[in-house]
Image (cartoon, rainbow, N blue to C red):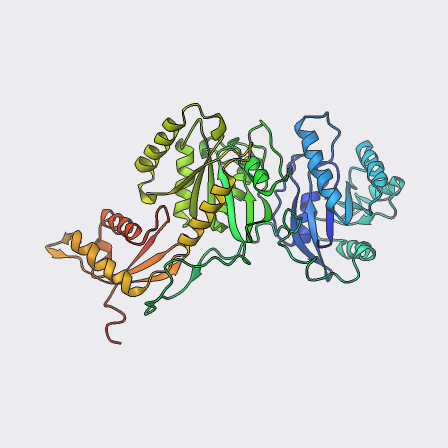
Amino acid sequence: MPFTVAIVGRPNVGKSTLFNRLVGKKLALVDDTPGVTRDWRAAEARVGGIDFVAVDTAGLEEAESGTLEARMRGQTEQAIGRADVVLLVIDARAGVTPMDRHFSQWLRKSGGPVILVANKCEGRAGLPGLFEAFELGLGEPVALSAEHGEGLADLVEALLPFLPPEPSQADTDAGVIGGLASPALEFEPPSAPFVDGEDEDADPVVEIDPGRPIQLAIVGRPNVGKSTLLNALIGEERVLTGPEAGMTRDAITVDFQWRDQRFRLVDTAGLRRRARIEDKLEKLAVSDALRVIRLAQVVVLVVDVDAILDRQDLTIARLVLDEGRGLVIAVNKWDIATDRKAALLQLRERLEASLPQARGVATVTVSALRRQGLEPLLDTVLQVYSLWNRRIGTSKVNQWLQEATGRHPPPLVEGRRVKLRYGTQVKSRPPTIALWVSRPTELPEAYNRYLIQSLRDAFGLPGIPIRLLLRKGRNPYADR
């Protein structure tokens, strides 16, 4: 395990701001409203020449058992238990509060290393609170301003005594199952361009490299079981779950491994219709979820068996396909379905009627709560990922083009037929075909859809987004 630093404290003292400062990116949502952070999240940090994993946590509060606040505290305790050092953050401008005293005593009893951080010490307004912090009995407080980046050198100096002497390569590996070293949203570029050109021997299906994690996002409407599904996949209570809608705010990244294949899994906030989003925090959470979709490779859209593919589900599915991501639909809560045959029929009809551009999209029935259907789901993700990487030889593309235009010739425009001269795959992830056309702007959209569906049928790409690039000009390889 890498050297890990957990940031804790009561709500609204600047923990997430400090987390973003340490990791050098705005990964955690920040707002003046207390309790923005609910689940702990981790990311690699480098400050003052030292590398470590920073962990942002929910605000510590006294709460009755079973409440949302109590579950949030449980998440924070889980992060503290995995950390090498704890940073207890207080608001120097507000001074030491009874809650600060309570949790400082609690951390002292835990026996682990604790560094006291007095945040918001810019200017003179924080000096009284800084001096007052000595009474907590945690040694000399580190004065800093997370928002302005002041005092980080002092924080590094306070961390140095706790650093391991020489971390091994295994300890710095971010692919620990269920570990803290989740590189929060550090996705690799989602597309890998290549020019197929004269490669007649292109592999029909690309072999999956188990050493490189598949970037898998879980999305859906609020309260359909996204967080429960993530917990079920990794086998631990990593993120908060409960009956309350809108539980998840930050996009939480977790690395895990299944059958020698690594996955980088991201749980996201529930996506409601834009007209219903009024709360500022929800807008931030939704924006974060949309960013995750754009960076993912495969997206699992979780739908509720009692409301299969309603309008918002279809909107999310179209967004995923428009972004060119591989799509898998997981019908959750299958264990409580009263009429499974009718539910499957409804799903099939909705897909055919509302997502014709992704005919054959992969669907799996699961019960996240009972951990049922997880292996078929991951098998399907691997299949979709492989097809999403599909590469087709140029000769095969042109053979298909000849047959497709022979069955259904392009339309006439001003008495002259549009000519499709040549085609080649120029990118994968998703499969992207360039076609050289005599009059590309005149080719109707309906004919484009026909070509895409014909490609999908000819090369076995059910439900995979396919892009056509229409280019004007002669065959670029005719004079070779």
